[in-house]
Image (cartoon, rainbow, N blue to C red; front, side, top):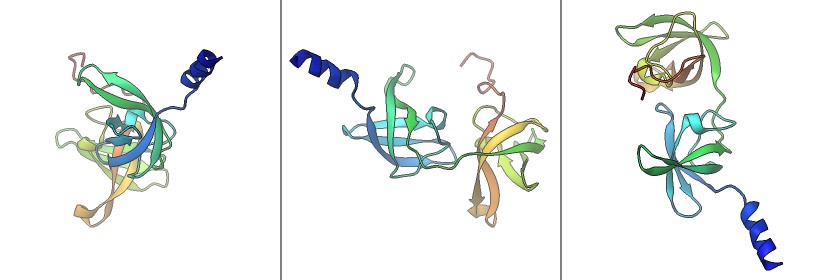
Length: 162
């Protein structure tokens, strides 16, 4: 009976949980302080049910070992309160200078820079994207797109299998 109870506790225990210590919205990553006192890296691609986290969010997650970095990371992270992404169409893109504009569902053009793109190095005019809008304090509070994901894009396209 004692062995069965122990097995049930182990097999049906809740996912690990913790609090978001920091979140870098423009770069799409942050850190979670676990209830066990550990700090884990989390990337936006590993979020489930939200597109971003906020400092202080209580989240649940799974742990996964990153062979490349030789560290544990949080994956399948749930409980975040960040906003759902908007959808839009790339209306202009200057490949040489690495910036352009996305037209949102209301017809408003939103600035986007190459550094705000997460699954590609550039955008294609007419392509559909998902993004998060923020106000750019350095540019008179005008909107800019961050956490941009080109629909159908795969990886960064570096051509080296990385």
